[in-house]
Structure formats: C-alpha cells, structure tokens
Length: 367
Image 1 (tube, helix red, strand yellow):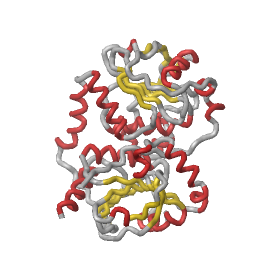
Image 2: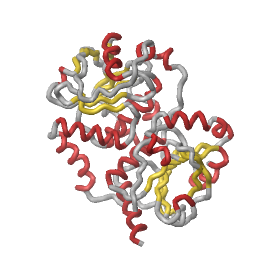
Image 3: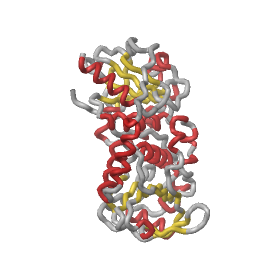
Image 4: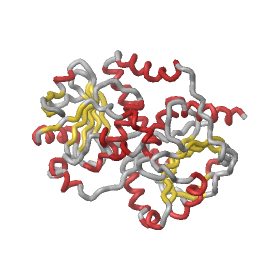
C-alpha cells in the first residue's frame, strides 16, 4: 500500500483590508524571494514589559525561529505554526515579528481560546518583538511581501545565517523541516526532540477505544470536489483500501486536524489521509468558489487532490452521521476497503490517539 498522507492544508477566509491595515507591508511591493543561506539583517526590537533585543546578535550560538507576519490575514497561519511547533516539542526560542499592529499574540488568539484541545500548548512562544518601521522594512526587503496572508518562517542557525525559510503556509512537513533545520544547526537539540517523542512511549500507553456507535456503519455516499477540481465520490473513490477521513466543520477544527496529521505522520501510518472541509447550507454552496480559492492560497499544489470539499446538500449526510456540535473538534474516521467505518473519534486530539488509529490501520491491512 502506498502512503499518501495529507501533509499540508490550510483554511482561511480572505480579508479585503490588507493594505489599509498594513501600510508597511503593502505600501511598497517587493517580490517574494527565498533568502536561505543569507545573513539576517541586524534589527532591534522591543520586548513585552520593556527592554529591547538585538536580532540575530542576541541569539549568537543558538538556533532561533522567527515568525514574521506581514498582515492581519496571516493570523490564522501564525497560530497554526505555533500549535504545530508546540506539538513537536521544539525547544528552540520562537519569536513573533508582527509587521502589522493588528496581529495579536498567538497565545491570546481567538482560535486557540476556542479550542480546548489546544490549551496545553499556550505560551510556547518565547516573545513577541515590536520593530521600528525601518527594521520592518529591512525584514520584508529580505523576504518579499507579496501573498501576505502567509507567514514567513525563518530559522537562524546561531551564526545569524538563514538555515531554513518558508513562505507557503503551515504544513506538518514544513514544521518537521523546521525541526530538522534546528537539529542540523545545533545537534544538541536532538536530545530534546528525542526526549519529547519518547515521553509518551516511556509511560504505560493509554488505550483509546473508538466510539462504538458509528463503528460498523457504512459511510454515506457523497460527492465532493477536490481543490484540484476533480469530482470525488466518497467512499467509492477509495474502494479496496483503507482511508482516513479528517472532517472539519469549523475553521477552528484546522488546529485539531493539524495535530492529528502530525501525530499520524510521526507514527508512520501507511494509509491515505483525506481532509473533508464540510460546510452545509445554501450560503456555503454559493460561496464555495471564494472559500476554495482561499484554501488553495495556503496549500501546496501537490496536496490539492487530498482536500475534498463538501458544500450545501452534499455536506448534509455527513453532518447527519457524525453531528457537528463542538465544531472546533475534527471528526476522524477510518474506513475499510468496503466503505465501512472501522474507527471514529470526535473528542479532539490527545497523545496516544494517533498510535491507536495506526494500530487499527495495521489490523485492517493484515486482514
């Protein structure tokens, strides 16, 4: 069986106030560029509570992650990065560099506040740095400022040089690439990563049983459209092999889905993952093109086929099956090759659940 995990997706409603809210980022258009290998410019920022910090001089000898936000539109991407890096147990300092005064600190974000399963990750950001207009300009001259709804993520290697750079939005694979760049820059961080990944395995594993009320039931026949503009009939399109469906009813569920995907990839699950943004109602159907366009802007093209949207009436059978209360929590279903539900969870990500789901996948594959 070929693994085809969904390693990137993003969901955000585009906002029309970018340039009005962010004159620094939008007043001068600078083409996007990849500055990997270059020296980061010397800048000075103010830290909460008073005082200042000089970057990169203050972090000489240690890797640091910079989260550069060019507009309020990248708030959702910022929060996803914070949650994802926290999920990986990253020990390196993480600094937010908002070039837009309307960006709020991620730990206070309305998205994080709305998701109980994420509360334990609050406070992972070390500091939020406020820059002068001149230093803001120096940063976006380095990175470019087009497509400013996506965060710029910069990993400095401890010598002030850029070891990794990303401006295509959060994805689990990008989060793991940041982790790898940190370890490559300073191998002593590998011990922290190993400890983080082994903490749960050193304790007695918690068994997470699937919800019995849906196990054994057939998944309803529904037709959606992938972001690659392919018509997909579910579960028919996946007949003959298991598939994991990650259903999101609300935008806040994206955090939960990200954590599930990171956990499953870490477990090495050998099955296809498909995300189903599921939005019932007439308005959703009318706005589907606009919503899809927003999702495509934050998802690598190679992953578009793994995001299948269900709008309006196409969403109704799925809502009827799983319910949509507590919409900030994803619905995770494992279907067997006949389209029957073999595993189901709707209580949010927890440590141990990806391992339990991976065991269920292995059980199906062994039959």
